[in-house]
Amino acid sequence: TDRDSGEEGVCSNDDTECNDDTSSPHKQSMRILANVWYQDLIISIHPETGEVERVYDFRDLYPIEQRQKDGADVLNGISLTGAMNGGSEDGVELWITGKLWPNMYRVRLKQHAT
Image (spheres, rainbow, N blue to C red):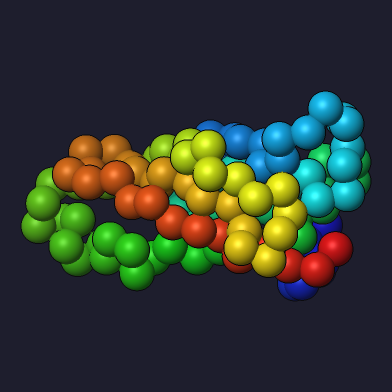
């Protein structure tokens, strides 16, 4: 269940990453990050409850109108940069790209209180 909207479940997760570099399997700051297939969204999932705790919207990163002109498609790839801050206020950095996108984007996801 999405804590913000109350909606049940998220279907079609595409690519996932774990955003905590720790030996503890479920440190309080650990979250699973997933991009939602055919949407420009990345969701933050609590590893124990499976709840979607945050939705990051990337529609403006590479606007659909521009993608259509370029022959590109959906957001379809996330990867940690390695510059993780272990739950600090600075957040976690990701590389984001998509199907036939001409660029990769380095972004920082701001953390939220747990």
